[in-house]
Amino acid sequence: MGRSAAVSSALLVLVVFSLGAWGCLFAPRDRADAAPAFDTEAELVAANAMFAAGDYEGARLVFERAIEVNPELPDGYLGVGDIHRAEGDLVAAETAYAGAAGAAPQSFEAQYKHGLVLQLLSRLSESVGAYMRALEVDPDSFEANLNIATAYLQLGEPRQGVIFATNAVELEPRSGPARVNLAALYASMGSWPDAAREYQFAAELTELTPDLTLTLADAQIRSGDLPSAVLTLEGLAEVSPTPMVFERLGAARFKSRDDAGALEAFAAAIELDPLHYPALNGLGVCRLNDFLRSGRADRDALESALNYLRASLRANPRQPRVKELLTRFG
Image 1 (cartoon, rainbow, N blue to C red):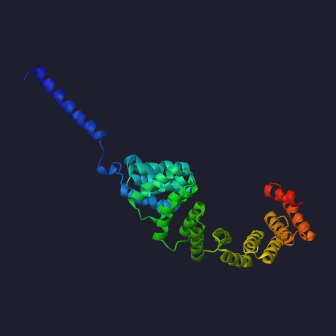
Image 2 (image 1 turned 135 degrees about the vertical axis):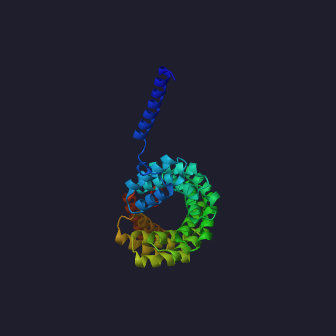
Image 3 (image 1 turned 90 degrees about the horizontal axis):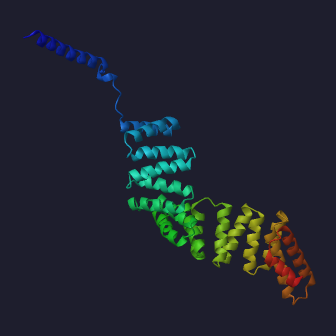
């Protein structure tokens, strides 16, 4: 071998050795020094545990890391959405849930939660669309049927909502909120006997609040079931003697042609609040009826009626019908 060939061979050996040495220098010393792989399943379990414990920031970091590793992972978006919703940031929650719904169109949870937050944001038409997609996955979801019915009620489309509200009642017949929801939809449609029936069911299944009782009585009055309305309001007056309750009782008695009972109830309302103008109107109309029944001879009844109506108008000047009565009889 010539001298030049020998030198070339030596240089080649040196270069190969040098590359090997540098490779050893930059290579990990062993596998334990390398960054551990992201175990998505285990990390999601840990993130959910942190979220449940109230460590929102720690959970957020893990969920966001999971999305970085797999941008099509619905559980990562759902976790971020849950955190934003718990913190009250509904706009950010909607963005996250939309990501989950897009990543997993067949995920009931993703579609339902997206619909829920859209409803909370008053984006009602979009909410209905999301709930419909959720119901395509699980038609027997009580929550989705109940919420889409409420969304239709908010949209002013009660006939569409009744279908889903009825489904919710059939799925959970002993749910007071489901009965109230169905009753409200019937009331919006003017189906007062149906509304009264569902409110009555709700009253038997849930806490009987004054508001619910008043709503039930109003439906009973509008459906023409005056005896039931009077009984409902008399019972409410015993436990919640407010001006409004006595005024509604007076109205129910007046429609039942119980003028003496109506006067008594209206007077009880005024005793509690002298400026309760609906009750003042009730007293005025009752006394006007006394005047008319007397063949317009009872001037005391007329004067009493006018005084009540004037007091009502002072309490609330925006009453054209009261002004009309004062013009006719005053």
